[in-house]
Image 1 (cartoon, rainbow, N blue to C red):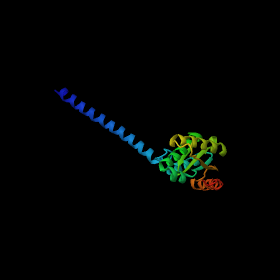
Image 2: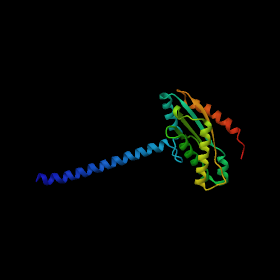
Image 3: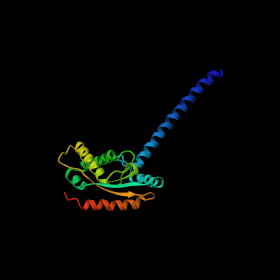
Image 4: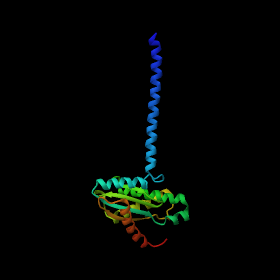
Length: 191
């Protein structure tokens, strides 16, 4: 008689444990997804500003430095005004994709504002600003034309770069690099 009672109880307990394990696995998956969403920009999938700052500060405490880049999409307001915000989003996505392709996986890249991006390149990944800028602009324009199907609109990005010595804070390196970007932007002709 005990076997007759024990078997159904064991089956019920096993089923209950299996459901708990499935619920736990599902909860872990949700937590990972929420963590990803909290640290990334929803449009581009790049790091958001908060996550970038945290990872940058950690890198500055543990690495030997590198280069800091700040970039923004040129004439995004004109694109939005002439073609709409969906096409403007295409421009932002094209620039994000281009930066990721050109800078590579060893770099931290973030969208830190509407049309602004920043990146940290460790010493081994640092190339010349001119090479990177040309490659990013070519890739962004090519990707934008594919996304938007507008062959007559050009997308470009202005890029500023500054050396990033160990121990630099995000705030100080951002100010220094922003000055470099601003000097480049004022030299660009209006559209």
